[in-house]
Length: 313
Image (cartoon, rainbow, N blue to C red; front, side, top):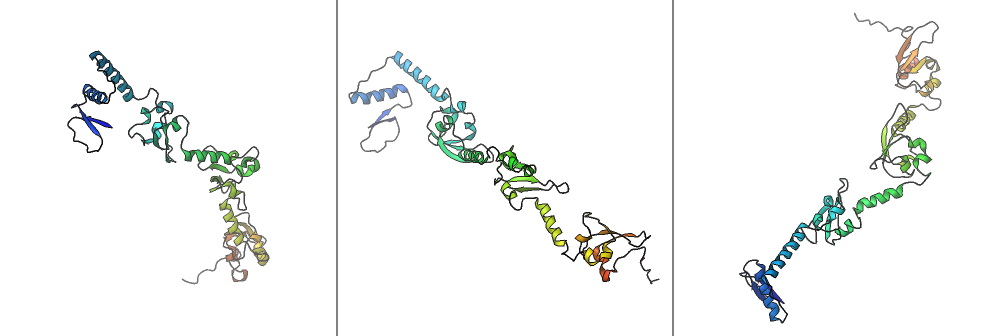
């Protein structure tokens, strides 16, 4: 093995390696002379070029260099424009980007997914991306998983449970999806709106949880639980314990649907009452607790039992 180096450089102490000098500088004629000397000494034919041939060779070399510097006629970016957005680095030839590489280049490159919610990084040859069309594997797996989770004909949530499907607002993370894209057993997170006019509460839950035992609006469920706790036990209602007082009940002001059978004697719900004595126009507001105090002689009709005047002067 023989090595040709620019003149003036310090020697490289490598055993068995013969050094030759060319130059100084980068004049191609000087380097050609150095190469010719080595070839002739080895018995390899070497032809000295004429001035015309030298000019032609230098012209050809300049054109080849211009082509190399300009890059390929069709680059990888020309074929797949978004590669430039995802390109991170050329691991095989650092500094060389996809705009300077042909689509079939086997240079190993680093890439970063351009989607803001992903940002996954991976390494693969440029040709795999430009010619085979391979993209972000993480996004690919998500698309395949989403496609596999979609229901077949007649098996969607909209078709199996149309009542519940009407409560669907959106499928979180899947814009444009509807109840026709969901299985009733899907675990995808969704937002729902309670159909009750007095509620309209919005809440998150997957369809699989909604099709189970606790399938309704959690706000309404809490209200039912609270109502169940305050409802009287059999034989313990206001109607059962104080029927005379119960007969004067007109309505429960905040919950007009309730009756004296739904109230405990100790209830603190504000109610409207009307005196049961014939001809008495007395009407007043009080809670069942206020009315049933002192053995049922609590807050009574203000017309029949006017408040006592204070003895203080």
